[in-house]
Image 1 (cartoon, rainbow over the protein chains, first blue to last red):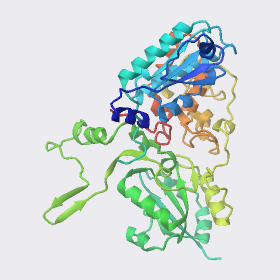
Image 2: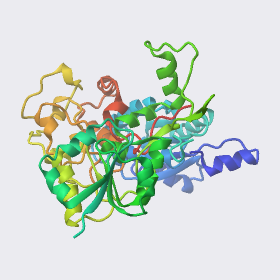
Image 3: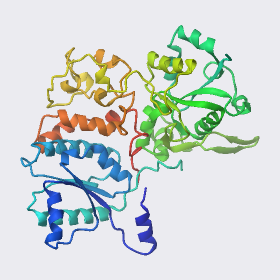
Image 4: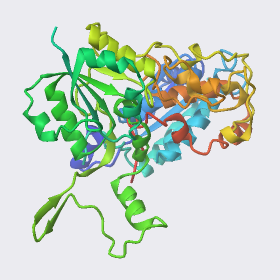
Length: 153
Length: 319
């Protein structure tokens, strides 16, 4: 379902601004966003951050729920392989996302709408680059519209 | 005590639910003692207009099986809801869409094109497609409108209880009917089965936390008789599926395909299973994971075989 925001944006002649839900692991990517205030770094405003204790906390239905609720793309950030605070939560995420991507492709959802990235707390520049790339990629894909579940038309 | 009035109806379904209702055997006599069946297209000759003439809420309970895929089914669901005090979604199609719901991988145009134009055995030179109404010299002919998307009963009308299964096991059917006859129905919205936990809770197979390096299709291996099928690389959905069936499939060496729907508290059965499967895949290497995952030829048909219309995404996104 197309969100109200994008309909409004179009009606007043604005370009499409993608909404990207980003699940941020407390021990890597969340540290980056937390530090951005102190260091006056401007974060990408297309990103809707959700803090989780580990990327392994991100159940596949969180991602489906994000799409269902109007997200145009979903980013999942986890710690670099070997660096998981809980030893292997990020590996579980790796396997989940692989399975989920295969399922989503059969459901007609473009690969570019879901992205998993590893960052360490010191990679602020990379974090910014990834969120920027993702925004542009999803902007090209256009708004996400789900199945017309609400009506029989 | 006056007898209960019960209606039974079928929408987008296969007829298996009617067989399941008959499967309660001699308990049918107990049912007949307690209840009159006022509408049951498979067995008694009561027309739609007869149902329409019944006063509102004059039927005590309606056991509705089948998904909602066309306008006739939607009309009957709404009519039976008005006429019945209790609406029961009986079987997986009414509950979550089931096999007819896999049509949500496509839309009406794709289905019509395939069935009426492109199928190898189709001979349709005039490219005739079903029309909801058609004018002939004698007047206008109508057939029900075929919808773009399959819906569940709950997405169409207010539902009081759910009896899960494809089809529901005899004991599950009786659990619901007995509660109805004795007036001991659980709180509204209950999914009626003997076990709200997973099929694994019913299953006698042993789990030894073995991890898998390869996913097999059923015909590719003969599974060990006593070990968990998922741990042998078969896509057994028991871990993400409501129990109460007694796990007959795993006990017959066949993996659970998920027909009792999600366990209590879970909305999206496919996503829940996917998460469980990610836990048993034994690899941390992206390339190897991709190879293992690529062995699943039909992920939606495997993870959402019964629940696609009731899942978070409800179906494929068609451009």
